[in-house]
Image (cartoon, rainbow, N blue to C red; front, side, top):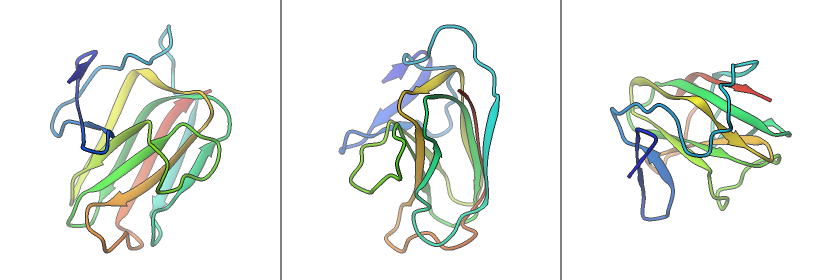
Length: 144
């Protein structure tokens, strides 16, 4: 499936993922105009667990997300359109897959709109869970 030149796929649970190795130029939920990054969120190093975090409790337009995955297996950066801490039962708006032992991320030049707020969780591929330092330098660039 492709949305505005961004190759994505949907898993069996219905979650959207960026196709590995493919970069896109936007998405169909972008607002009109070209937003610029006016705010940033940074997580120097992930803690043990899912790192469920609220970035903004008001509407935002996400323009970029990047991080380094220092663990051997992949990690999903699950992005939620909500103003409260996400739970494992919540449905993400978008998922960015971070390949193991590599830098990864995504840019949305036209923006990905979050109408309620912006929150995230980090979900590893394996059942062992994240350990402190598995994700380094997670950065989100957005505008309000």
